[in-house]
Length: 214
Image 1 (spheres, rainbow, N blue to C red):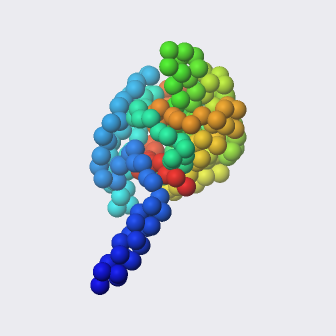
Image 2: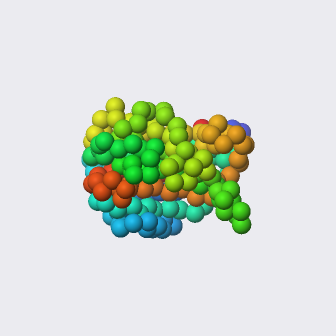
Image 3: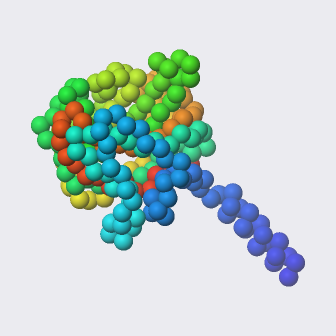
């Protein structure tokens, strides 16, 4: 019996070592918004937890407004480089040039931030956006922040409305590709549904957000 116990213990240890590290930032499915803070730019996008298809998600309603939720947390990209989430939108913002200041609105966006410390001008960000008028996989500098904030269209006008899409991005690899630097940590994650520049109206739904090893 002692030998069997040792074997079982060894198996459990190996399983625990092999388990995928998972760092949860947004547990919306458990009706939790711990650590998420609001940042208002213009007006107020309304964020509220809501059950959709039997799962609690974070709903965003924006009408000519721009405010987001952010969570400051240092993430070690050597341990958990992959950002995971799901999202869906109910409306599009049509007719916008999303690479201009007047068209810098998105039905949904998730972004990661690397702070520049006292050298605030060195702050970097990647915005993963659900674009209404820009093709999927397009990349461009933000109209307001220039090449300090790069935009990447994960979904574009080809994506269906009212369909949930799951995403997984290697943040460390994306930072290397977009900024040419091997950045090994990030400092915050944010989400925003914004319509302030266009004066439009959209609704979006965000699922849980977490980092993983692979």
